[in-house]
Image (cartoon, rainbow, N blue to C red):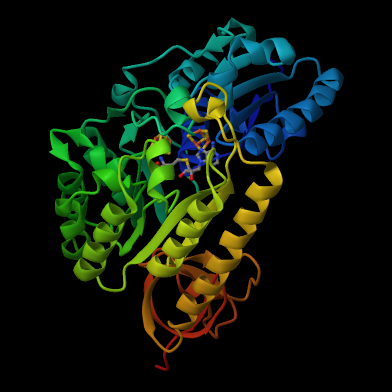
Length: 444
Ligand code: SAH
Ligand code: SF4
Ligand code: F3S
């Protein structure tokens, strides 16, 4: 070696699970003796941790990859690894299309990274690590986590639901749950390191089962000293049980927020999506949640223009948004994904119609979000401080239990020194926008 430490750089796309996987990639490589580069130009190994949920996400990655090709021309020793869902989904096809890619590591095979060490030639690693891995739940990898106070914790991997539009079961494999004892150990370790909030991650956390069910897992985390808040993503409406709904109001550290993807307000479309609930079932669960935990924030995902979606199906979605009044939504144009059932359904909706419906959905929700946030003005909210606000360094930022961002002025010159991340403050909400609230420390 040339005496200088070999460096890696990770570029991450996609969901929280992928961002957490990147923390694991970073943890494994750091343990092997690599250090993290501040940008791609400075790295000996560039890792793309990719997402293929929609065509756009995949294209964003492919265009980035094209750019790196030039970098590699100038720097022949540079190695490129593609991890994540595109690696899994494209497999060898990606290596053919982009022969300058050195390694493919699917999301079920991050442990393969242990094979690369800065002390031995990087070429000793197998180029393809994309086999199904049923042992994944038992493989513990060190995660190099980002800023406190919040930490992601995987509780399960994969998905068995096969919603007809979705690529995830094809890339992340079958659902497997981590043993609860490993999860407990990890959360205890995080508390000891000073993390104050944990977010349990899984594609369908309500179906967690490994000695404990999901409610049992939440109750376990509730008893760990040092942890002040517990969150989770994502729930599938069909598996949201009465027991879990009861937990929402009764487990003290469990925050009053649930992300419950509806996808469509039309029962015909829900059936074609293989979601296995009707809008009526969904509404009943929302009503129970609101009775159990008044003030709970509810967010959702919506797909516009699923194959076969008529104007009246779209209107049913609009009506559902008006009725439920979500705190926030993520809405997407339907994107056909290779190998999924819906990609070959009849009745594909033209792009212009998908765009129009998406815009209508977003405009309607914007109004609802603004109205909901406005209704908080004047209230006092429990906010966990995260650090200096990104836009205005004179302010601090944090989140309510309902997951709303609150920026606030402490009135002190260097607020970061006075209030550390993880501190809980009660703030009076004085202004509300669509994306954040503004709070004020009540007069002492
Ligand atoms: N496991 C999570 C969702 C993971 S994907 C769940 O079931 O809730 C996140 C969101 O992306 C989905 O909820 C869906 O709204 C959207 N999505 C997934 N596949 C899509 C596709 N092919 N086109 C458009 N949106 C899609
Ligand atoms: Fe995809 Fe459905 Fe699984 Fe969510 S539950 S990851 S939408 S298949
Ligand atoms: Fe996540 Fe994208 Fe894969 S949303 S699960 S990284 S396809």
